[in-house]
Length: 311
Image 1 (cartoon, rainbow, N blue to C red):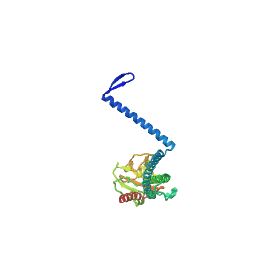
Image 2 (cartoon, helix red, strand yellow):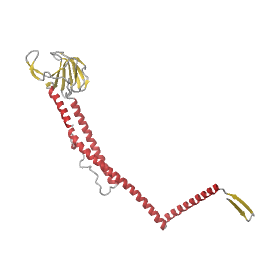
Image 3 (cartoon, helix red, strand yellow):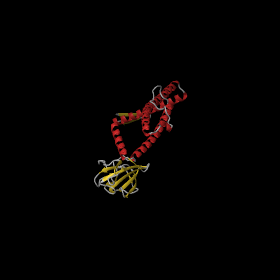
């Protein structure tokens, strides 16, 4: 495109050549300038009208502010409703935890009332009128306190159950010679050496020489020595004045002061001491008085059968 510009005063003319690219750039520049001018004018008029309270501008501003507040309130309401729904689910689960803790507390021998736990709280969140933020915060505080109380209760129950398990582990219920039959039982019998009636203070388990002898429960070895009557003998103290004795072994595998666990090897079957053949003489003593070991071993089998039946 050619443009001829003529100046009448100076009696001169000038030719300008505009290519297509230059025309497009000029059009874009002019459009941007007009848009900036329009935006600046609109902004100036809008702010001035809002400050001075022009009728039309003031109404528009109020509508915009009101709409913004409504959107903000709607967003907060949706968030509060979602939090309230989630809180209701948490409270429902807390009810399940409370019911479970009450059942387990009976097994652990713990009375929840002894821990001064607050009762009558929790429960599912019933939807009615919308909750306020203050009510939601108060409910969350109650739930946090209840959670702390249940945590304390479960901690105490865990400790009690652990104590019970430790006590069970310290009771001689493990077969000292698994898979081997019993010869002489606890009670009065004819002594094989004197031919007279005498009290047999333990159980005799038949086994070949070298068969491992296992600890009937965990404890501390208090005796590991050669005895004139019992031969190579091991005694394990399980606490609470409860001791088990393993006699006539061919070899001792532990020494005095050793800590042993249930099922650990203590010695090997032999025929040392006052014995007529290879076997294990097993005793259980409470406060130094011999008890029938069969009662302890039978109690273990009864518990296993009861557990199997419950499953």
